[in-house]
Length: 496
Image (cartoon, rainbow, N blue to C red; front, side, top):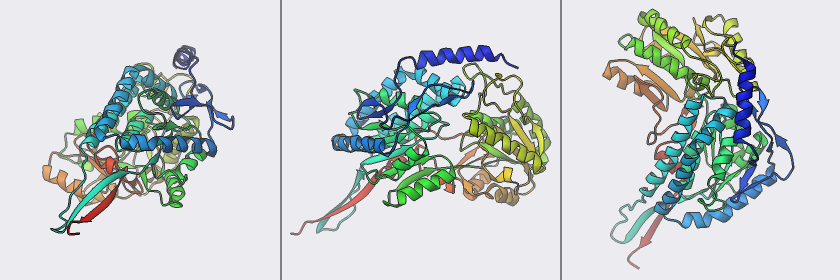
């Protein structure tokens, strides 16, 4: 068992260094402000299971204030050319990069992810802002053939004030995905970070002061009620949400009253298919990373491993070694895995482990608390179940933790039926050397992303989003710009 006092001392030192006298409140109209009601909440450091600090809890009036600031800033921001907006966004990106280490350490502190992964998240989020700044500058209207007696053209206009509701697993990465696209297309933003992980988002917004015009980017902190005030606000004309399917449904219902368009990036129960002609060693090592990266707290985690029966034994030998080699501990150290993000989620994942046992699946690895993890905190071992049947709850429901499920298949049609046999359709992985089969699978899988002979293929330029109950709309690629603009058709008579 790791020395808990040493870890606690380290984290308390990080809190003093990162928080100090700095104020973490709402960010509205270019200033850090307190919430009006005086209520607070306390995000935890999941490594030591202790509060980091208190943050103001926003009510509907605070959301109104943020929306008013965003409304006031919209005309000025929209009036800039895409090139000029891009220059401003790149300037903000440069400031964020100057504070890269601070933002990564805040992310590790509040999410619990290893510092190396936090650094990668921050850098990737910044790159998405820069990507949208460049792509938006090249986004042009269209001039259809209006005939000889008229000129027709199509304008793409911003919605105005937009709302972004962020998840706790990738706070700054998703900030880049959502806010980058919204701002690049001329919208202003009201951002609601997850109540478990608001600090890095607040700090990133504070670092926009003096770069973005006041009111262009606003942050309101709070729980689900604050998010509901954002998604149901009659002056917010577009909402983007990433999170669970049940909460996504609530966001959609709230937005429906004002017929507000939504982008929803929801859950996943993603298949990882291994065919007998695959490079089995590569597939097995990739499978471990695909399902356990970020502690399995990723909507695109490859959790359902569908392995052809002819290579199951070979696959498991390599795969279980890869799982066993993952190190678990203090996320500020050089480890593969830190704690789960918060207590409620930790309890949910442990309940799913017990459910797997009760459903008759065989525990092949893990299942408990890591012996080498700090004595405090929300830790779960990398866990693997075998003998899993497609109809089991553990094979159908999103666990969102470091838990994977191994199933076998004998025929192509069986593999596709099992892969598509959930309510989700977000991501998928396929390992095969047969190019024709790869193309066929890509067509047959009900998933927004199909990654062949690798996993995690979302980069700037490739759209990301789901089929079925995994969501509506696309982010990451140029398609995200379409999510934040509305088309206006104009036709002018020339013969009058």
